[in-house]
Length: 285
Image 1 (cartoon, rainbow, N blue to C red):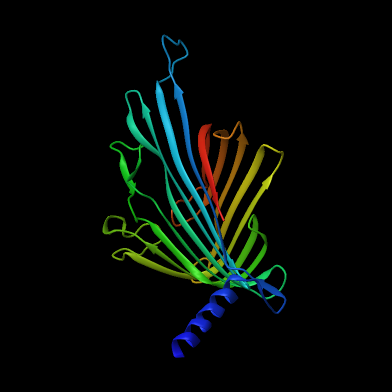
Image 2 (tube, helix red, strand yellow):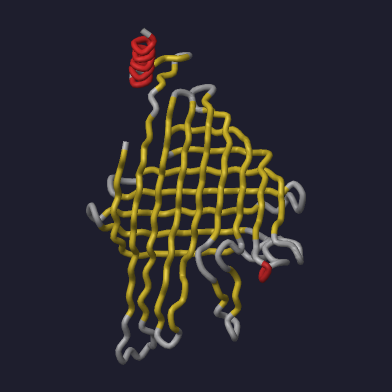
């Protein structure tokens, strides 16, 4: 009798979970949506007896972007992984790193009206390999794996119109900057230390939309103000990427990336990448 009763309870539980349930007029359907994109940008320049001058160059960038979004009733959990690595081979200069980035974003939200959520976010940024300043002789080491690395997290409020339009406001964000012994005293970390703590205001936004049927524009914005030190100096990380679809497996990409961080540099940092790329996109629901 107990076995039959247990079996009925389990059957009811499974059936109840697999069907749509309504609680406070919200449909509970646990669901993952995964979108991944692999891209490879390549460009080459070759000069033979070119009187205006020029160096033979081969360059490539490999990028992987993953969006993993989960919804269940009032809960919303968005995860985004952005990673890219690029190299160039310039005649007489050798192989140099042109792009190196790893970033993980996680945003958990509990819905309380149509577009607003109570939220908690986590963000990690770093790079894979050593980076050099080639303007100096000899070249100067300026970065390495997890040096620097940035870890940010905190509670806040999320406005989410869709998976393509979100704004998160976190007025009590903890931020840790990590460096190795070699970079102690740089990137805002005090000399002799390997970690710097900051508490401040964070705003992050994501806008992705179609300009035409084959042209899309992706915007990723992150702003941070440290209450504990020079709060008026706002760090800015802004990326805008235009993608022109040629066909299912090829596109043209144009990326603009702007960084303002007085702990890393007193100047505005700017990067632009343009090229014809191979891509592969998969969806899983």
